[in-house]
Length: 415
Image (cartoon, rainbow, N blue to C red; front, side, top):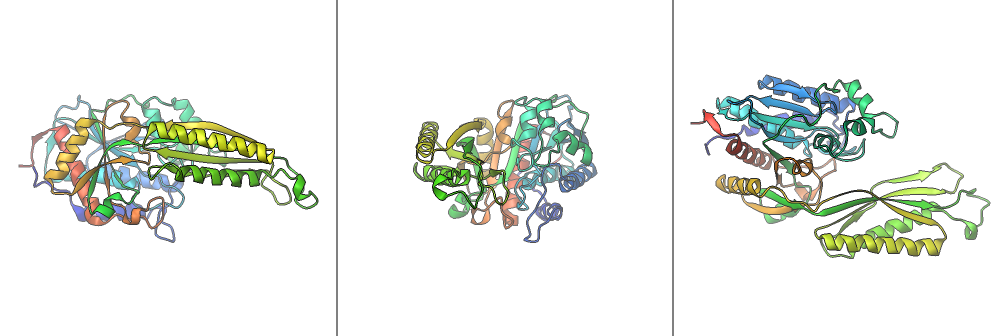
C-alpha cells in the first residue's frame, strides 16, 4: 500500500484551476463566503466530485458532503474536510488545499480501484473564515450543535444580507438536516500559515493541540462635536481613545513572551462622516497564548490598561467578550497515525500547536479529529502572495491518503 500515491500534477492543476475563481490582480483569491465566487467554487467542486462518482448532500447551512461509497455503506464515513471561502485579500491555498487534497484522495482510490470498508467523504464547510459572516467556522459549529441552525441562517453581513438569503442566491440552501449524519473520523490538511516548518526544513506538522484564543470588542464612548469650532481641550474624540486602546492591545501581545499574540483587526467608527468628531468607536481585539494562565493575565492586563485610559481621557471603555476557543487537544490516536504515516512516507515532520482556528477544532467535540500542516513560504497566509510548493502540497495529500485508508480499511484493490 505504500506504493499507492496521489497524482501530484492533477492535484496541483486542480488547485490552480480553483484559484482562478475570484482571482485578484495580485494573484490571490477573493471568494467571500456565499458570494457569487464562492458559489462558482462550490459548483466546480461538486462537478469534480460527481465526476469521481460521489453522491452529493448539501445541508441547510450549505455544508457540502461528497460521499464515495464503502463496502458497508451503513458504517460512519471517514471524512476529509476544509473550506473554499477566503478572506478579501486571500491566497490560493488556505482552506482550498485541504478540499482539493481530499478530492484527490478519492480520485486516487478510483484510479487504483480500491474499495474501502467504510465510506469516505470530503466536506466543504460554510464560512470558515468569518470574513463576511461572523462567527468563524460557522458551518462546522452549526454541524456540532454549538450554534442552532436558525442562528447560523440569521447571521447578516455589512450590507444586511443574511446567510439564509445568500445561500438561496447561490443555490446552496440544501434540504439536509444539519448534523444529522455520523462521522467515524475526521482529517484536515492545511497550509501552516506560519514559519516553523519552513525554518526547520520540514514537510509535515502533526497538530497536537491549540493555543488559547479570546476575541473581544472594545467600545470607546466619546462625544460627537464639530471638528472645526470645538477646542482641542474640550474634545472627547473616541477615535483618539481607540488609537490608545490599539497601542495597549499591541503592548499586551509583546509583554508575555514569544508565545503571546494580539491584534486589533477590525474597527467601526460612528458616525464616520467628515465634519464630526467620532463619538463611538468599536475595536475588535484578538488575544492568543499557548498557556491558559498567561492568557488570563493578558486579559487582566488589558482590562486594567483600559480602566486607566478611561480615567485619563474621560471617555468610556467597555471590553466585552465575543468568543473564545482553546486550549484543546486533537485525538492522540489520529495524531499518532498521522505521525507514523509521515514517517513511513519519508517526510520530515514535527508536532506543532496551532495558533489559527480550523474546522478540525470543533470536530473534536463529536469525533476523532486530526490535522496536518504543510509549509507556507515566508510564513505568509491571509495574503495574496500566500504559497506552498507543489511537492509540499503533494506530500500533505499523500499523508491524508494513507491515514484515511488506515481508518477506512481496504477491502480490495491497491495490491
